Length: 208
Picture 1 (cartoon, one colour):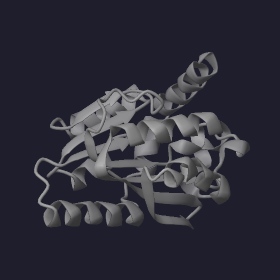
Picture 2: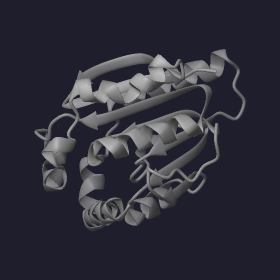
Picture 3: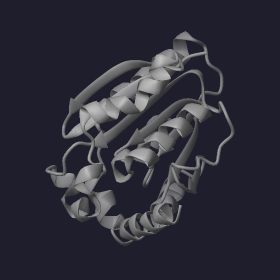
């Protein structure tokens, strides 16, 4: 736990100091996330879900909350500077500082969970904990989109590369293994699993 705490502090301090630069670099919508949110909208419509709930883990300044205004939206990020900016931009959204290893939410709360470019900061044991926590807070039939970097050659992450250890960057086979215990026991179903733009992406559904 002390190692996790030390790393959390390191990452938090880095993003606090570079928040303005990060916001300027990451002010566009990733097309893959847009498609996922479009899928969310279709599911809500076709299944007639009332008061759908959405959680963005690693929400930063909250750019995707512009696309989820019809949801009861929540956000979590390690950087209090980015959370402050997200709260300023989205006062109607429930946003807080926290860790993906200890989600401050009750069981089966969310219809949809999004996590973009967070999991690669964690070692394998921590990644397992993060996946377990996401499954805990997802409702039955809930969907999760999760992605992590496979390399740091993209320009967006050049300023962060000294905080990413090479052995933490995702390999597709290793990423898939994180989900196998839940697939094999019928807890989740993988809907999409692919590599794109220096990232690995998995979309899964939590079963009943």
